[in-house]
Image (cartoon, rainbow, N blue to C red; front, side, top):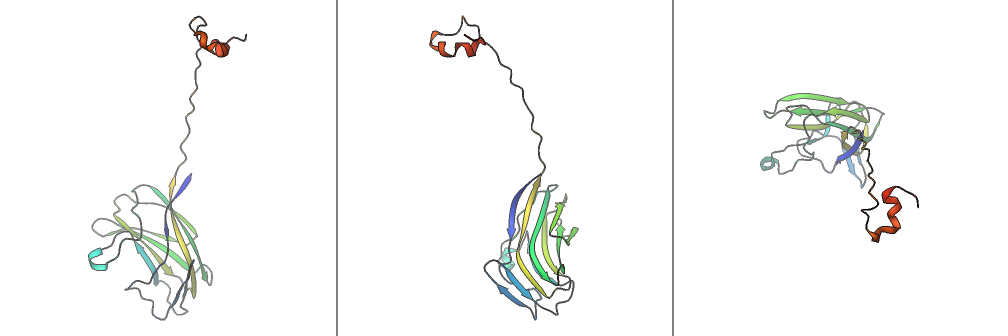
Length: 180
């Protein structure tokens, strides 16, 4: 299988509407440090969407469009204190904005197939009792199966030595298949 990077998802800013009261968020050059010892399990920390209402929110989608039926992988580059106290949630919606599927990612790498009928999706970072999160990035890869290579045998054809022009006397033995 081959993997091609579709999007590196970063946490760039705090968006209105997120419940982060009592949280301390430090944006560094290569990471975001999030602290909140009293954040309840199951609370959303940050989210990204593939569709937005620009007129209402004045923001563009942070996630790329995906192809239905294609296989993708999410690679998360983050660390929590205590360890393994976070999960990613991927929610798929149809054109009527109805939820048609959900994937919970508890490991660093999760493979999924973008469902048929999906119109948009969201990726959420959810607390599972963490006190601190060091968020670097999440990488979204397209997974492409290795295609078999079809070998073609080449046939060689020798020329009649009477038809070879005199200009080609140096390579005449190669063309007619004889060693002179």
